Amino acid sequence: MRRFPREKESSVANREQAERQRLQSEGLVLRERTAGENDRLVTLLTKEYGVLRAFARGARKAGSNQQSATQLFCFGKYELTRWQETYRVAEVSPTELFFGLRGQVERVALAEYFCELAEELAPQEEPAPEQLRLLLNAFHFLAGGRRPQPLLKAAVELRLMALAGYRPDLEEDGPVGGVQYLDCAAGTLTQRQGTYTAALAPGILEALRFLCTAELSKLFHFTMSDQGLRALSAVTGTYIRCQLGKQFATLRFYEGLGGSKVF
View 1 (cartoon, helix red, strand yellow):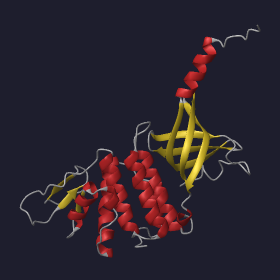
View 2 (view 1 turned 135 degrees about the vertical axis):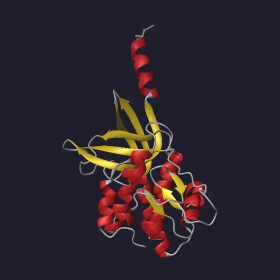
View 3 (view 1 turned 180 degrees about the vertical axis):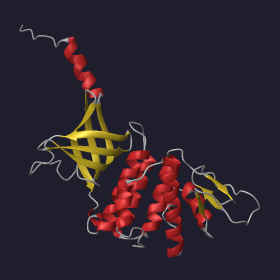
View 4 (view 1 turned 90 degrees about the vertical axis):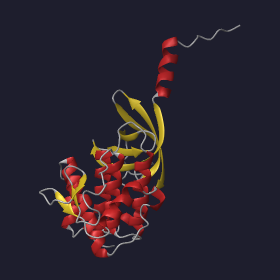
């Protein structure tokens, strides 16, 4: 009887290790960058593993099945393999490309800001289902022009901050009914105006509380006047700048376009 050589134990172990390092998750492309002549380096926000960076080999080649699926704003199902200290895109099945974002520069700019903010605040290599769902819902409304941009901006900003542990303390300071300010550096309410305080016009405090606590399915379903929404967006933007101590290039670009348009 013919005997076949037994597979070496080391080969079996290597294959099992490779299988363990194969990841599958839904994800959204937050950033894409050219890597070499034909490759891309993509930053993904994934449901099971948070923010990951992976190389997509040959993704820039004409006819590549990864070409559209590794573009900015693409949402799909990704299969990644880990190689040394990096990930590689093995397979990808695009689900939504959000073409509606690409027709207007203001929508593209605001979506890019959401991506940059998520990359800053979402966990790395840890589950991030709420952050992913938040961005997908925001992209859906933004692409269709179905919600005011200041509302979307304020909701994404404050909810991402709250999920990252930067939720402000919105218990009223002093007598109820007095003028309230948000101390953006301390993350608390105060009745004293200061260097880093933002005045809270009527309805703004209630809106901030709603954005911190509402179910994600209801987060974008509230109404305010156009003036109120712009004031709300200004407060959340100031809060982020004070808490994180940085400026976002994508936000500067969006604001330079006359950002916070109603639609």
